[in-house]
Image (cartoon, rainbow over the protein chains, first blue to last red):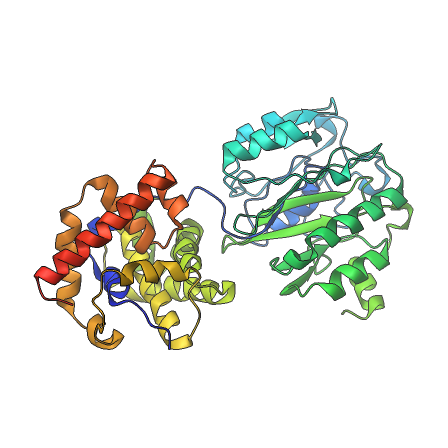
Length: 290
Length: 182
């Protein structure tokens, strides 16, 4: 039995007037994956209606209802044929956002975006969701950003390769794990190797993630490693009626938060969009995971 | 949603009340449970237990300060988990520091914990502290924040907070000694 100091125990009974009641302003001591690359709003919103509100994404895109039966997002555009996942104009899209959807609910303030460089010109806001933006972060910005918002960054500079934007690897075991990535226009092979390297770096920490959500079907070896090596508590697939078969040109990731305020990670890696026909469940079944 | 609105929903046994409760307070509850317990799973379970307890307790309870009410439940749940589940404490220094307030050969946990006088004395002693010191003490030993985080919350330097905590522990020891409580 643990020896519990009686004073420590007795403190539970003190008057409520003594209890600090300030709400928590910083993220939980849970690892967070933050990818500042283009994010998949279609997936985000579909996930959002599963009571995982609080999605943050810097790239909000519509999805084709043919692959998104939830209907949370719809524009009738076949996203698999879009070159970047970024819509060209607001008129071509109709984004249906659940009333209670609050994309900036993760205590990441609007100011967060000031550190992002808009690399696509099609940009506007809809229902407070930053739409059609792709953000690139740079080392100095990242440091400032996390200083400002309470994170303790450790920057790993090994990931600066030609053609790849700096990829800050930010980790402190006592702080929320924040990972910011941005990969643009790199060959598939580089991208895959890149991600492998990254996950090797954080492999022993990934067990802290509660779930891994996969949404694309290419690069199965990558998935095998991810799934087999890291004991995620939960594996969520996206074609359980909510969404499947998203295909984008960029590596993508997004935040979301479930009703228990636990952060999960979604990583979407689509390197070969031509293969975007099968679903993640098929992939996982093929792998023997499901 | 305001605390009163949540309480009204709970009183009406609306499940929305529970979801709003969870939405608003889980993070705070997890701060407490995760601050004390080393196991993330245990902390999450305690957080869930806390929410369930609140759901079961309101009504008939109608707390004036819902946040404090929930914090106290969360803390009790967490300590119960520590005690009964043999879950190691996340920060062993937390208790080591408070041990300074105890004389050697202090009575058993159960005996001491049953002393309502101890809680009453703590209430009185906390009243003697400045608001900043009280906040610091409670953030450290009630909410189980690391000293550096507690210092930050109280807008103090780490050194100042460490010193203040040490002085408060001495003060508490003397206070309890004078009343022959420990």
